[in-house]
Image 1 (cartoon, rainbow, N blue to C red):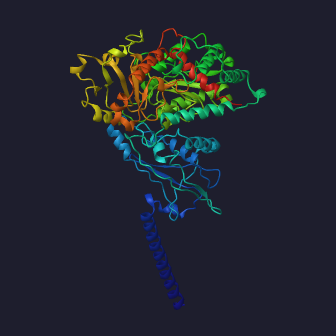
Image 2 (image 1 turned 90 degrees about the horizontal axis):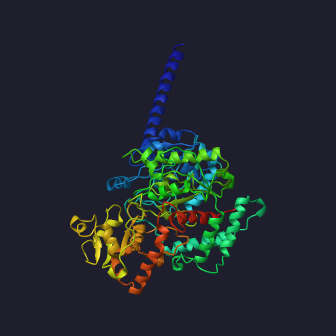
Image 3 (image 1 turned 120 degrees about the vertical axis):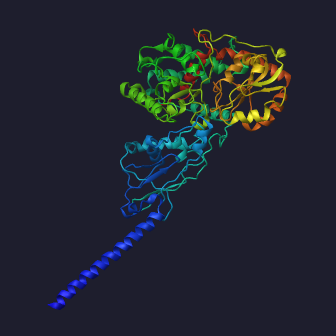
Length: 607
């Protein structure tokens, strides 16, 4: 009996020692895992890995996002997009308006949880609705990854979410692997690119490449052979118009047109004629002021306001019955959207994007027209710099007339329309001060004055400010100079007006130069000039690559006098296409914008 009691005590002691040893081993294991795994998720490594976890660290916050995947272990890049883009609280929509915020963005790091052995990127999928739309997301990623219209990392206005994942053509995902016999999904880490805020774009699409993209687009469109019986009468009318445009044979050129300005003046005339005869536009009445139906007619973003005013008051093209419409106009003001919803200094535009998204979803739910075509016959006209961001993804199939026509942030050549940015000084008389001196009295070779924001303008000033008397290159126009000759007088007296990009690729100086009979010199890589699909910009402007700024004067001086006189005459001839009138006139800016939208629809329509 005594031996039995002693044996029991010994067993209890041995059991305690065993538990103690096991506890110590477990603690040591967890401590080692904590140091070895990022973010100290040692306990996670002990659990079944049916889900995969994504942890995104940036310069502002660390957020852990999760989504549930119905396809066990299968991860698509599109899921990653939906995953990150719905995390509005992670401040992934930060952007830069100043050098300080640009530098802060540049410090963003991109850390994604790696598996212990394979160093693969891992994403936990547990409960996000966007997975139900995996098919749509996959097709979206394919369009994002292909072509030259991808968003390039490093633009000051770029959304940080896209910077984190860097899903563009040149980075992309190296591969996606599914391991048989395991429900783990491992995504190989994409090749990283440095975020380059306030720096030149990583890739450049020169004007000749833009021309080739446009040519391929039209060539592909002309090969389309839809099933005629399956088309609606409105679509049959547009396809019939396309055939007539392609096979256009105009006996004579309209005397109001100057043929060298156009890529193909016969096609333009035929298309314009068919637009006047055929096109019907339905303007949605939904939406309240000031974001909707309240145009701004003065200032830097007046283009969207003037078009809204003239389109809503139009009796030739606008129809009250949407069943008769070929196109549908969504009349919101991107400028008023900023005024109404943006919180100053918040550096967060999520509310603006969500507002436009909700509006689009409301239109789609209330009317059958959006869903009938996937939005391809709907269009917006927006001039604010943020418009590409506000309309991205949820309006991806629609025609977007944008001032910020940048191929690196999603502008699609052949589908979207480059909207002229017109700085209107006098809303009651937008044509005041039009014109300038004849070529023989323009004694200034080149002129520029303005703020030095963005990365490009400081480079221009560095090379040419106060360097050459023929090159009147200033920052803000000095008082000593403006007292003798103000800004407008300089443009009226200069042979060439320098139009460098600012924060974005577009600049109101392009249209200003035309307004004052000055040959515009466009210095902005990846900028698609206005009405690119019909106008031949090489006939009336000089397009200079950003890298050639040090050689700017040599480029201008090398242009023969006869060539300059031809270009200056062409500027005066093209001027009529860039003017606003209280009552629209044939071939004016209102009609040119509407024609470009019509032209885009004609060459995109499918079964």
